[in-house]
Image (cartoon, rainbow, N blue to C red; front, side, top):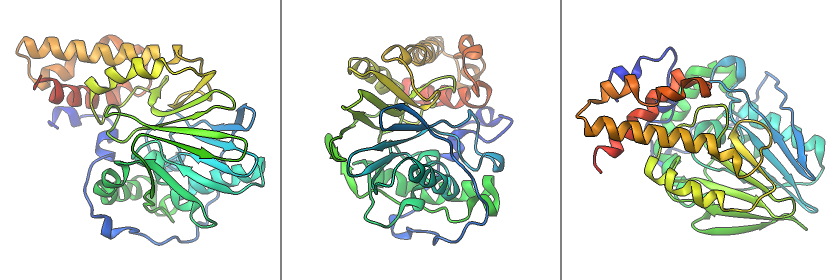
Amino acid sequence: MTEKSRLFSRPTRKEFLRGAASAALLPLFPRISVAETYEAEVSEVAPGVFVHVAPYELVEPTNHGDISNSCIIVGNDAVAVVDTGGSYLVGKALRAAAAKVTSKPIRYVINTHMHPDHVLGNAAFEGNGTEFVGHAKLPAALSARAESYLRTAQTRLGETGFAGTKIVIPTKLVSDTLDLDLGGRSLTLKARATSHTDNDLTVFDSTTGTFVLGDLLFSGHIPTLDGSIVGWLKLIPELMNEKAQRAIPGHGPKSMQWPDAMLPQQRYLETIARDVRTLIKDGATLEQALKTAGQSERDNWQLFAELNGMNVTAAFTELEWE
């Protein structure tokens, strides 16, 4: 990344998502008591499907790392939680929210991908037979970034907000498709090709036709690219062909009409790809691309100033080798 791409007012999501560590170092921090309390509100968007909606923000002490949506799905026998937030404190709040809507045990925690705002709450769900589920490529990707994720979270959240946070890596892995039974309710998990990241997973609840996409779907919050823009644009039509009554984005409202929910994101990614390809063809540098690529989309997305440069950098790095 060039110096130009670092000139944001706050650290970029890309900086939050870099680093390396060995899986042998995990867990890096023991669970400890958390004095601060935090509540996570949930809304029922379909029978037995509850969504926690997070604000469009970067990680900071005031939001405790609660910047991505989470989902609680209740079956006749058990519960699945999809994504756990960006700290132990947020995960603990989500667990308390689940306890308010059902007394059934949480059998599965499903991580839709590796990013810390979706996985750093996992520790709050350890024990009582809960299994952690993710894409087959998630353990390697998360292990490689663990030290950086934790260090950055601790810096941004402070000691109190970070307390208890550690990496918990899923051990029940999905390389293609996996069905999970919650008792009278089946969830179909699909491992997706490299797009937003190389370890994205979708969850479909056949009982209500609810499609949980994690960060394969952004609304309002600018999409962030940490995988392949070519792969993401190729995947979008495949996702839109999936039949569903509603979609739940990783960042956005609690529920959206499907497949129309995907159209603004598709337009944004197509714009970035088109602009970057044109600039590369004209011999422009990355520094020049950062000034102009995607600017027609500026007014359509929150956090554009903070994150568009990261997306342009990732797209330029990929597309210059086409």
